[in-house]
Amino acid sequence: MIELKDLTRGFNGLTAVDGITFDVEEGEIFGLLGPNGAGKTTTVRILCCLIRPSAGKAFVGGYEVGKDALKIREIVGLLPESPGLYGELSAYRNLEFYAKLYGMPKIKRGENIERFLKMLNLWRRRNDSVETFSKGMQQKLAIVRSMVHEPRVLFLDEPTAALAPESAKVVRDFILELKQERRTIFLCTHNLYEAERLCDRVAIINSKLIAVGSPSELERKFGPSRTEIHLERASKRIVDAIKRVKNVNGVEVAENRLLIDSEDPEVVNPVIVETIVKLGGKVRYVTRSANALEETYLKLVKESEA
Amino acid sequence: MRLDRVWEIAKKDMASIKKRKYVLYGLIGIPLIFAIFVPISTIYPITNSEGPFVQLPPFAQPGLPPKQAMVAGLANLTVLMFMFLPAIIPATIASYTFVGEKLNRQLEPLLATPTSDLELLIGKGLGAFVPAMAATVASFVGLVVVVDLLTFPLFGYLLLPNLISAVVMIVYAPLVCLLSVSWCIFISSKVSDVRASMQLGVIGIGPVLAFYFLFVGGIVSLEWRALVAFGLMLALASAGLFSLSKATFQREEILTKWK
Image (cartoon, rainbow over all chains, first blue to last red; front, side, top):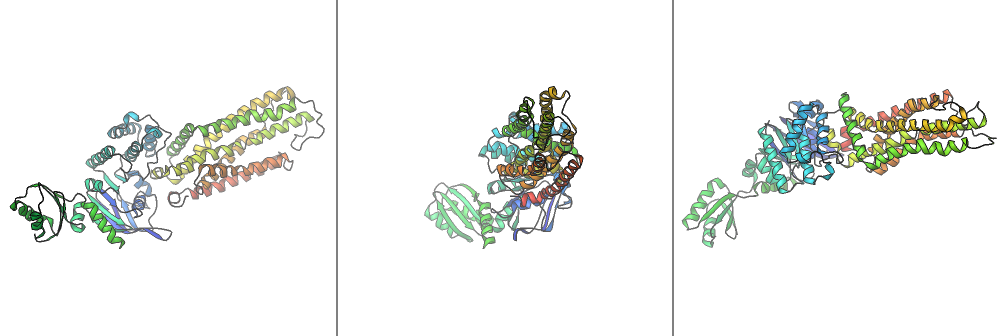
């Protein structure tokens, strides 16, 4: 659905996007991760045909960026970093305006506005002017605006950045619902928990492409292999025994929680659990480190800057 | 070009203007001053004066008795002043719809829609042009009524509308409005402050002001050659500035180069 081939874009001698190549399948939720200034927004702007690449090519829905700009804009929806709504107009009028620009017929327009506003709990406020909305409500309305014409590809730049946890959850559930409709979603985010939860695959960029793959693939390939084991009581004897297990690189203890670094967790973890049980320890639960993608991301970005 | 999209953009901008009370006050207040205050303060004292009108100013209309010549000349002056309206009003509106939207980051989602740069430019231009012209025309109707009420007892016929006012309203006012809108679009790419845009936008009044003072000073008389020459000059300036604003109003430029 989206294809980037050596995509490059410079501004005044600085290269914001440097020879990036990857593709995104139809119906996939694809995350673009990177530090500030890594070229995420520039990439999205190029793919939405707002700016042209300096070199390389990109295709969206089979149309070439730069050559078929109007066709591409018809099939994509964009949520930019800032909601950019018309505060003096009502929520309904904001959406109606955009739906008309996309040439939607009147009945379909009304149906979609109602459906999406209801999905994001904004229907009751449809006739209120947007300037009376909270930041979170404005962000949700901007998401509806990007969806109102039912685009095949949706570009979301930090969709939950301004949202309270409960609103962020509503938006994440909404995104997952869109996935059920086989829409392709391209998500720029700093929220690695969100990326891990929502994305089928992610790309990490820092002007250049650093890595691309599913979150678990990246964690396996590049991340520290950390396993968290919660015990009823973590004794010194158990910790020392684990440290002696082959391919265990280190053990950190925090109360009754063990953080274990190992070469190949899928092979090592059963041995560790067996060791604990043999020594009379009681395992409450075993999980992969909660911050696995974050650690992978930080490691990769640090390496790219070195 | 999709005219429905162009009109939708213009309609949205006009709806936004209605909700901005300071712009709305300007849109109503300034035309009211031009329609009522200006003729009453200039023509009424003369119609009530017994004279004598020994030395007439250069703008007095030739071929009439002194008092009537003075009043008819003043009526023409107030009509020429109507070119200021389509120069001032768009500066206020366009400052909000271009610079204001740029500052509020409302342009990016708009640029992501399948509208062409030209559709966007014309739509947003119309959003400033239509209310400015509507206010000018409504104000002119008010002026005609006020001037005729004041002057009918003196002339015994309706002084306005006359040929000059027809040229001003049908030819000059739309051209001045286009000139002002184009100028505002151009400066909106250079400034990042609504007030600065409004102040610079009023520079669009320059050609009108020059023509007005040339007439007041008697350097130009309202005969057909001067009218045609000024009309041509306005048309050329409007076309030139519109081309310039079209070159400025490109997606890429707006997102990467506009201040």
